[in-house]
Image (cartoon, rainbow, N blue to C red; front, side):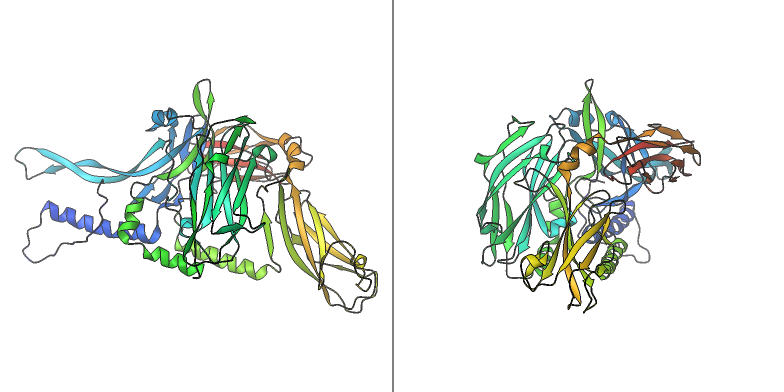
Length: 568
């Protein structure tokens, strides 16, 4: 079990009359196992293949669903049936809880094996029995240790993450692509994770080398973040556009200045040190080719050695202290993205993206990131829609676009429209800027229940052109609706449920401070039974722990869930 050396490969050479020993048969098993595990590791990767979802059962109990994963040496870890565990009974609990001020612990999975059964040994003079089988199994344990930034993930092939600040409740990471071309704008992301009930705020400068801000050409980025300005989701992304210098095969760097770092909880200054440096390779090569060459350039020994000992993190378990004991507040599955994508999945995703690209008539971008330097945070989507006209149409004719889904969800949004002309984009009446410009009015009709809108054009004079391109921007002001959303609440009655297989039970969703009380029911995982639009839940045939979710149809971020235990 402890042997992680997979090669060199040697196999038995058989010949007539050869005396086979126990070692020969063990050698045969090792050869087959090592070959398979090397393929698992080098071809498929490390992480969860399917299942292994972790759900909260009660304040101190979790359930791990059945599933499959590959560890860092390619060994298959199979959880063949759901398992329920109390946190204090898991290995590492005391150490993880007492390790510091962490507001969370990690649930990890590892491979194990043990002997099983008895078989009589006829080679011994006395009656001796030996283990008859070796059973492959697994261990679940808790740890407070976080992984290094080079943890094996698919996105690490094309970008690199550097943790510049981390304590028990806050983590700040800088993320840059591995390769960029000179004078080509690229995004530099700062990802923030907070698990504190307090509001976090910080500021610091980032010194750039061979890089400049695309906004003002400066070699310094000033970072300012105040969580109280946004909906408290616990995860935020700040994005800066950078431009690399006109150099080749040179590293651009972004380094936080520790002397400028300021950190606070609820406006009260706290201690903290920021450090680390992010690199991006500036090259004239095609970035795609550079990623491929870089991946293939690693030796096999280096690839395996760099990941030996990496943990397989199934979940981050958020804890709160209640009466001196830790209870479960929330669970985040596979927090570091350790997934193994099968060829079937990759093929399906690729085909779906091709189909979507064929059906999307205009380019559209959607952003839901906090924006720096303002007192509000907007969710923004934009695009260009072409509305066909009848050339020579008289005035007072109306032309409509097809239905446009803005992608910001249901509810109210603000839509800004502008006509794209050869002189630039004009917002409002075109006649204000040019007397000879065609006279028309543009308006949008929003359908908040569907998350879509329609653009209409009313001609005010004879139109000679065949079409008008309309640039649209949809905005949802988060701060404007923060107070409204904070008072909205959904509760499910009963708040927990123990039910027999195939039994049915009616669940009621109680909506507070919501004008539209329509909810959508769902079950996680999908094999956990069925629930209709009225809340009638039907348990599956298989025992286990499942999550039933009630989500507002108008405000998707407002939802509630309960755990359903199905047992005979």
